[in-house]
Length: 313
Image (cartoon, rainbow, N blue to C red; front, side, top):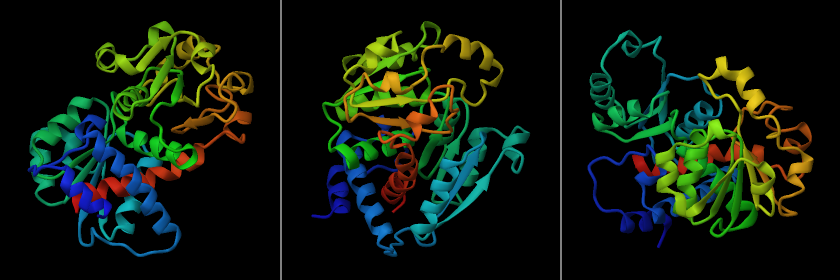
C-alpha cells in the first residue's frame, strides 16, 4: 500500500481540512507526512516530474515579511504542477479594513488553498472558519507548525525516529517553541526549555504539553546530554522595539561551542533562521559539523510539498 493510500485509510471524510497547528492532524498522519516529505525530496533530487496539483492554485497572504516560507511554498506549488498568488495587505482590500470573514469567503471561492503568514493567531482561525478550502498557517505569533514538519524531517533523515529523543530549546518561549512543545507530545520526545523568567512559553500551551516538557532558566541544564540543541532569534518580527531589553535578558543564552560541548557528542544544532550570528548563536556553531541548519531550511520545501499534496489533492 502506498503512502497516499495509507493517508486515505487513516482519515475520515471531512469537508475542509486546515493546518493551523500540529494538532489539526492526527499523529499517524503527521508521521506519514514526514515519510512522504523524505520520499518527495528523493524524487526531486532525481529530477522526477510529479504534478498532482496541476491547474490548482494557492493564495499566499503575507502580513509579515518572509524568505523561507514564501520561497518554499511558491517553489513547492510549481514543482507539484500548481501556481501561487502573492497577496499583501498593501495589494488587496485586506489592508483597507475589509472583514477577514468576507475576504476568506471571496478568496476561497477562487483558489484551491490559502497560506497565511500574519501576527495574531485568531486571524488565521477566523479565516479558516470562513474558508471553503484548506488554510495553512505559515506563521503566527503563537505557532509555526510548518517549521516543525521540516525540523522533524531533518532529525529523521540524520538520526532516525525522533521518538524518545531529548531536545533542548535555548532562548525565547516564542511561536516556534510553542510548536516544538506540541511536537514533543505528538512525536513522543522530551523537550527541555531554557528561557529567561520573563520570556517563558505561554502557560496554556505549557499545561497542554506538560507531560513532555521541562522548564528551566539555565541553558546548561537543558543542553546537558541533549540530542538536539535548538535556538531562535531573541526578538521576532514585531518585537524590534524590545531588542535592547531582550539582549540584556538573554545574556548567557548564546549557543556557542562551550554550550554545545555539554550536549550529546553527536548532537545536532537547529535554527529556523534568520540567525543573528554573535547573538543567539556563534559563527562557529552554525557553520560547524553539528549544524543541520541549512538542511533544515531546505526541508521546508519538501515538508510543505507533502502537506500541499495531502491537503489539496
